[in-house]
Image (cartoon, rainbow, N blue to C red; front, side, top):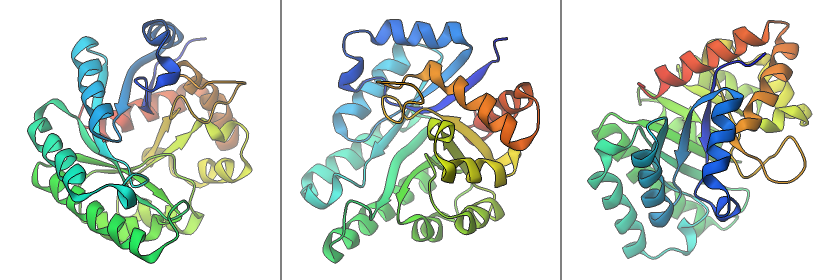
Length: 252
């Protein structure tokens, strides 16, 4: 049976899709993926995401500034991306992915810079009332502390503790479960414990494939059966709840 779902986070404009992006998109649609949210991480991928959203009415763009690029980027590059976000704010459904990545960045100076830039991104999301998509790796608690006053926040590809997840849910934010849930015990426990009304699902394509090789939006369906089993509910209920949550989270 085909369920309708939304892949709430993918990167169709990344090089792994260069040869067959259109076919990948069609494959997702024929599998039941009715909408896809394509997330930018820097100037080029933001521009590409906007172009994808212009070309396909069922693909939506978010404009991001990945924390992984922040420690090495000069101020001019950061400013360029922040002003790109503001210029194109009406064409995007959200701001992000942006946030804190303390897994890769271990220096105090680099982390301070990530915090400073993230606060600038939060300010844009707040000023224009846009959903904020957070990349928080080993910095989930601080990312929550910095963003808790915003109306709509999605913790994308969440892999933090169950305690922090509960705090995220308590302030009314959303947690997105990646296709990692198909094989990661930690992500299974997150999916099992999160209230269904706070859950989104995503592939983070081309990463984190539940199958061999490259991930793609069609594979988001693999998560639905796993989550349904973990929660002891019907697959249709998971599909419907996550679609409704995604539309509410991004005001679609």
